[in-house]
Image (cartoon, rainbow, N blue to C red):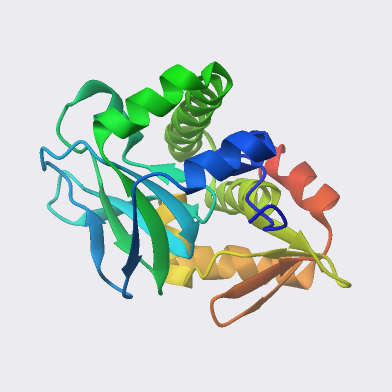
Length: 229
């Protein structure tokens, strides 16, 4: 597992090889089929999942009763750690987007591991902080930026966290559909389509079915930092 290209902000990428190998050996190995729920909003379970391979979509119930897509999680990251730490009901639902392999750790196993490895405890704290910062930025974006800037901001962050450099640019290794991207951005799908088309015309991105490559990450980040038009 040491050569696996874990997401740069994910837990496994921040641990020493010995600590990472120990964590990967904990708990029970599980495989989830596409569409299977790993964690459900409101349930009282306290186990923690370490994603080893695959993609998971995090959703929560919106005030209108629909589902809001909150985030994407990939192999190398943990999910369910909040309930694993405080024992409160699950705040969101995690659903497999394709085949997912994970290690399922009981709360006590997770706590004992963190006690033995203070560096890992700090790393878990950093990942929780990063998730809260992402959520805060999305709330600010929804009220403070127009849709093209919000699209650029989300794509720049996904490229930074889940991007893999290729010959043409940075491929975002997240199988997002355009409706799902619209949900992350918090905008109507047709408006997001227009924003993506504008980025394509500027030569900043190329898109395909569940695939996106950023051709000019520096310019995309400049667009993300702008006030929009």
